[in-house]
Image (cartoon, rainbow, N blue to C red; front, side, top):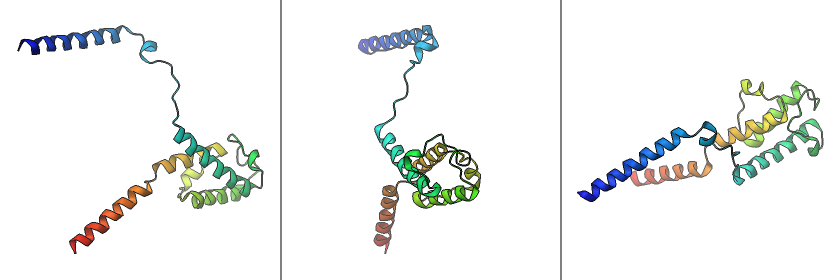
Length: 146
C-alpha cells in the first residue's frame, strides 16, 4: 500500500511539473520552427506524376518536356485554347484512370494545378491490393456458403 502511495505521489508531482514548465514556455518554445520533412516515397510518387503529366503536356501542346514548367499557365504561357485544355483533361482522365468533374476543370489553370490535383486524387483512390483482398474474401465466403 505504501509503495502505491509513493508511486502515485511521484506521478502527480511529475504531471504537475510538466504542466508548470509547459505553461511557462512561450509559443515559440512550444512549437519549434522545423520545416516538415517529406517522405521519400511521397517525393518519388510526386515525381512520377510530374513526369507523366509533362509527357502529356508535351504531346498535347506540341512542346518539349523540358519546356513544361510548373508555373506555366495553359492559355497564356503554353498558348493552349479551350479545346487543348479539354483534350488535356481527357488525357489525364485516361492516363491516370480518373474522372475530373467540370467544376474541378475550371480550377486547373497552370501545370502545377494539374500536378497537385492528380496527386491528391490518386492518394484518395482506394488501393488495388485492398480491393483485391476484399474480392478474394467475398469469393471465399461465397464458396463456403454454397
